[in-house]
Length: 218
Image (cartoon, rainbow, N blue to C red; front, side, top):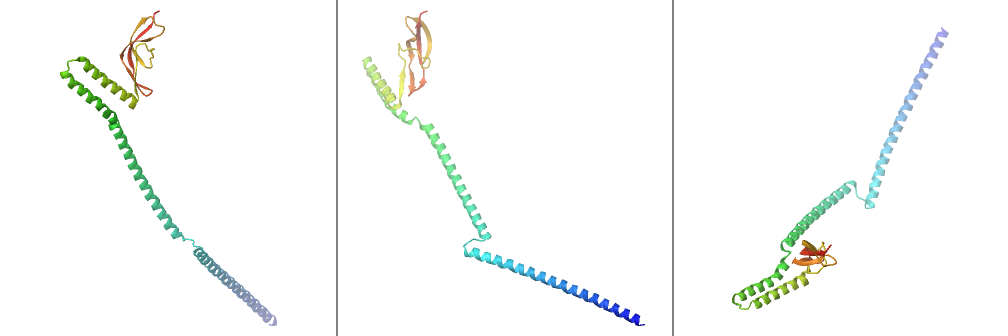
């Protein structure tokens, strides 16, 4: 009997120790959870505090917020678009103006020349009127020669138009167009007759002289 009581007592003590250990473990676990929760709360509060301090520091330094930066960029983008549209419109107007000026130059580029030719036309009209009652052909011829001389002088001096092609000039295929050729007592090819004078505008040939060429006899 004694032995049974002793065994029961030992069993109770073992159960109590087990329950005590479980209780201690539960308490430790709860303490750890509480510490972890407290740490997370402290970290969150610390992060919020740091963010708040950073925001305050940024405001103190005059820095803008992301929303303000976006608004500034949108405004800058709108300004650039406006400038681009204005420049495109200016360029289009410039292009149209240049095209109009080019067309005007093409249409009226000879206006000054024609205006200068009017004097010669007026002189021809006067000569024709005088020829109706003229009894001396020489006076008419002299009048025409004067008009021709005045016209040639104006074209040469004002417009750099130069006539070329005279009998005896050396034949130059870059200047002369030979419409016939014959042999003669010459040392090299030369012009024996000029049917139409050639003309240069400055250094550019605008019409070749039509000539007869004489070449050395074989």
